[in-house]
Image (cartoon, rainbow, N blue to C red):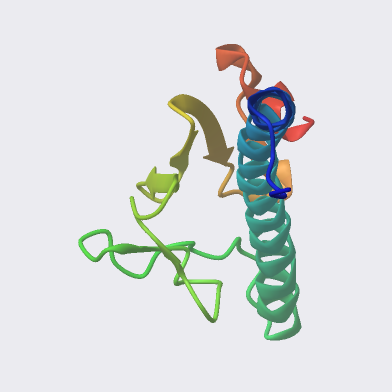
Length: 140
């Protein structure tokens, strides 16, 4: 007597694998999207902390002005005025671009806009622009 799988057993295994794949693949892609959103949240928190730190340093040096976020608008880096490791512009799945006061970040073809208030009356704020409705993607 030969030991092998019957056709019915093989079909059953293929059906089970198909069901598992149907459940796992959507969860995999939502996990990638969640990671991209977490990266943007981390980037924004880092930018806000760096602005606050640089402003505090300016005040300690007797300069009561908000820090400049950019040292150059022609290079491929953003926030090099405040970050030790600037964010590369328009690279990867999370794409940043900006001009020193207005910034956009694109995730999954959705654009989230930010504005930097470069004055002490507004406390050097870096805020999400709620007029475009995508701030809720990052919980703001």
